[in-house]
Length: 364
Image (cartoon, rainbow, N blue to C red):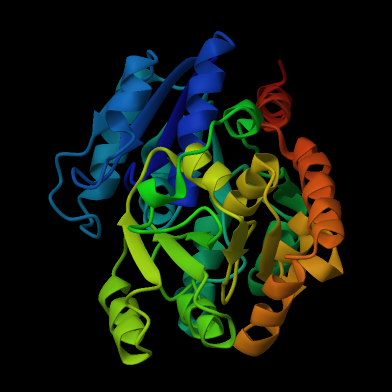
């Protein structure tokens, strides 16, 4: 089967990481898989997938938001005659929908909805634009029930063509990773110190401020590692300075050794304003560390347990829940549950479900 995935960039975000694992596994299953990347910058995973035998095209258009992008998409699809075109994220979602108007109807188009919310949904006129965009796709994959529910409220016509396929993780990487010494990640950290980790892009979607403020209710043995990059990183650094927490918070930037970092830490927290799924929470559960996440759709569904949730924005209660995890009985119970829960989200299960939907569309 000849498959093309289209995405904005191959940067270090959750959707991009998921696509990296997806295309590598699809290629191993014998599919002819390619990726079209619409931006020439921030492509941390590009060489990695190329080394696995996946062909990668990079758009020659200088702006991700240029109307010319749809011509780039049309050109690649028309030349290569793909069976499946599978699209991820906005604006790749728009450009491919427009390109489809000029492409053979034998090609099937799929879009994966990766989030429960986006800023376009705050503006009523986008609803009419997106009626057209979503109707251009033969099928829409939603990464959680919450994602599907919110999409169907926004554009009701998607209800009959949307299906839920939960995200998947390469569990072995996280199960078998070896920890570092704590001082390798946080200068002067002692092994008795408690390392909290959050892996997330610095964006409006993420709520780093609640986690940072929670440190005020914890003693100085609790230290925080923030992994990731993004447009709001300077705002978060300013908050750390304002709260006088520079000696307790470390910014690690983009990292590829997430399994090893997680194995070294004592608690994982994902503080979010909204979330489609929360792939990194599954990675943390598979790593065997206790997990706490914001009580929002997507994350609520993934962890499936009330005592692993904290109210969005409540830094004081988050701190209390982290203290509770120092009790061995509680900690061990959460860890065992998380390891078992993560088994539901294998990358192999996800890729198999995707392949089955492809086959159904193509009547294979």
